[in-house]
Amino acid sequence: MFKPEIYKSRRDSLKKLLGKGVYLFLGNNESPMNYRDNTFHFRQDSTFLYFFGLDLPGMAAIIDTEKDKEIIFANDVDIDDIIWMGPQPTVKEIAQKCLISETRAFTKLSDYIKDVNKKKINIHFLPPYRHDNMILLNELLGISISELKAKASVEFIKAVIQLRNVKEDVEIKEIEKACDIGYLMHTTAMKMAKPGVVEREIAGIIEGISISYGAVPSFPVILTKNGQTLHNHCHDNVLKKGDLMLTDAGAQTTMFYASDNTRTVPVGGKFSQKQKEIYQIVLNAINGSIKLMKPGTKYFDVHLAACEIIANGMKDLGIMKGDIKEAVNKGAHALFMPHGLGHMMGLDVHDMEDLGQIFVGYDDETRPSNIFGTAFLRMGRELKKGYVLTNEPGIYFIPELIDLWKKDKKFAEYINYDKVEQYRSFGGIRLEDDILITEKGSRILGGKRIPISVEEIEEFMK
Picture (cartoon, rainbow, N blue to C red):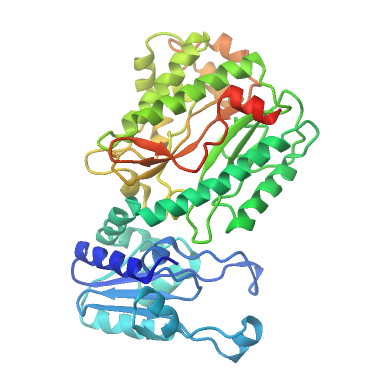
């Protein structure tokens, strides 16, 4: 945990943004893997962690702005718990770690909510994403499970996002730690990318690195020779010389702050000329777009700039043609980059996506696109100092998508389909760094940038 004063300060800042009412925070519970007592690694709800810092299952909290109360609801352990878990501090002792003095048994939460309902006071809650909390909210508030997301408090959501979007210095230090763990994960994967190795051998080792330094990876490891599948979690392939291995992986610290990086490397340590040409375009896109990231710039515009770099590079190779700015505005580039440039990152690898991506990445001034490819951009709003984002351009040759577009002659004025066929079995390349928006620009997080240029990768893998 951070110092107790940090959590109190965050709650005080939140209360200044909230109106009168009762604001309910639900922590997470243990989640069974295949029966009740065999559970997945426990992961506390990130908003609960942000405002209370208490990494234990079976907890809820209330901020009551009507009565100016802050209450933790949780049960003290009994002798059965002690037998299996050893002696544990009381809930009151635990609550002191975030400077909350009033605690009640979890069973009293229902009584508190009933009393508030009788007084016709507004009860605000955040959209639930776990089924047990959906059931609990249904029981507490009488709202059907299918309506919970729609009836979550927009006021509450926006206030939480306003605070969590801007990272404090202590958070940035934690993210830097996660990035340093990520450096070890990715450089280890590079060293292991040799002919004859099965993908899961590498995926298992780098997952173990994350666990040994803090917690399970910030998301399931993506490691594959088939990089044209954007989120490929199959690790069954045997690597062969000439393959490209795409690794998209991140770590979590002991306080659950995330990293998220991607590198694509040649199995055996040497790019072919064809691979090198496509790789350099993606490298130009990540380096060029990072230079544009600064306060006051819309990330939507940074995304489009990265797409133009990719499309211009593809034109130089004869794969695209025509007016490139026009092609990108219409979405022709999305045959090769069918996703957004990046997303917010912090306590969640896709920060606060549970609260609604539209609120995290967009605002009244900047709205999502409905054009294929750009429509998947999770973050478009104006950048501010303290934002932490991933930046992850890529080029992919997806045979099924190529066939679909070619059959319909889609964007034939911008795409040379005969040339595209020469890359049909190429696969995909993605590169990703984690970026902090500073006062006048931005910087890559982590003590050292993971090797990224063609020369750096080939020298490192040697």
